[in-house]
Each structure stands twice: as structure tokens, then as C-alpha cells.
Image (cartoon, rainbow, N blue to C red):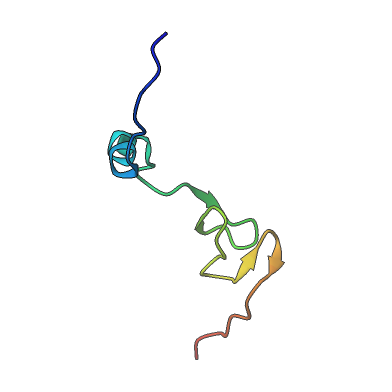
Length: 61
């Protein structure tokens, strides 16, 4: 089998791999408040991450 004589540049490699990128973010249901949340992100509604409070959410007046 022939081997490549030159290394592909990063730009050329990335151009070839553009179709492998995810088109839409993967969304899950928050176990605490049942709103839609992206994977590995804190919930915008309740501030929980992996079932634990990550940030303190203040109730709107």
C-alpha cells in the first residue's frame, strides 16, 4: 500500500470533516423542572446541573 508523502494541512483536513459536525445541539429534559436543556449545561430555568443546584436562581418579582 502506498503511503502519503506529505502531511495534510489542518485547513484541508477540517474542510474534509465539515459534514461530521452536529447540526443541532442535543437536548434533554431537566430532571428537576422538566424544561429542555442542552447536554452538559446548567438548566436556565432552575439552575440545576446533574440533579444538584449549580447556581442560585432569584425569583422574578
